[in-house]
Each structure stands twice: as structure tokens, then as C-alpha cells.
Image (cartoon, rainbow, N blue to C red; front, side, top):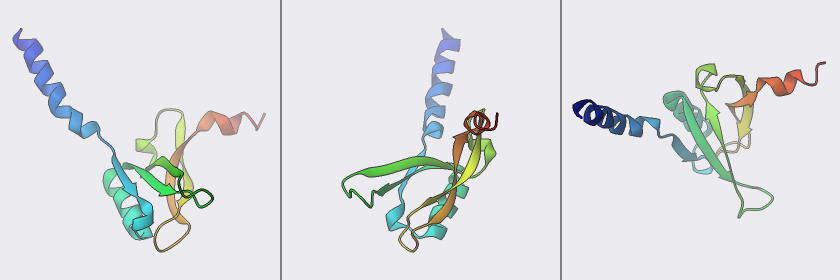
Length: 103
């Protein structure tokens, strides 16, 4: 019984560490977005669609390969920020998708 309680305490303490930060990039500068991703390792970046302003667009962006799942790698992507329309960041993409076209 004591071991079950100890395990539950340990698990409940670790849950906040699993949370991922979310940022609205249209209110941030490019440098601030890049700094947030570097600091957090991975973050959800969100902005409004240019074609349909009521449509939110978001994805998960990462600092490096360590924050990508197995079989994926970081690829350069761009998000719109308050000071530029193309702020360079990285997002994880499936490695097998690229290889399927090389055969």
C-alpha cells in the first residue's frame, strides 16, 4: 500500500513537467519567439490565418532533434510575428515521407 501511495505522489508531481507552452506569435517579435522555443525546447505556436482571420493556425515547434519523436527530424519552418512575416523556427516532420519519393 505504501509503495502505491509513493508511486502516485511521484506521478502527480511530474505531471506539470509534461505541459507544453503555448504562444500567440502575432503579439511577439521574431527574436522573442525564437528565444521562447530555445528556452522551452518545444512549444505550440499559434496565429490567425491571413485568408480567414477567424481560423487559428498552430503547430508544435522545437529547438532541435532531441525534441522530435523517433522517425522525425526538425525542418525549417516560418511563422508570422509582429515584426516579420517569416520568422524561422523548426518543426518535426516525418523522415519516412521524404524517403518514399526517392525510390
